[in-house]
Image (cartoon, rainbow, N blue to C red; front, top):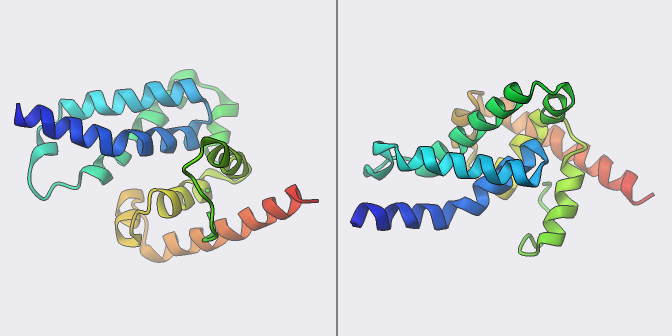
Length: 163
């Protein structure tokens, strides 16, 4: 019973973040929801999830990323895969409303994924630099460089939107 309660708590605390991450990568609401559900099905079968000191949040993001890549390989859609390789500068946005997040999501879709993903994980998911670097199997310097370049690109997109 305690394990079920702990898993429910993990689900409640992380489902929305994982769903939004998947939505950010694939851009399809229904597929993102299905992918997020698959992540938690896998999580329910992962024994380490309940171990003390196990980084649940990072593991969930990694599984979500892998399931998203599996989705793209499965549909073999060149457009969707290119869209994956197409993320917030630190300005005030209230992501509590779906409308604001949707506007932001549309701006992110204009960026290459290598920038979109790192910006999402840092700015929306609030993943620390070191954890982000480990998760993406990159150096911290590369993560910081992608964040900087991604912010610059996002500003350009935002400026073009305002024209």
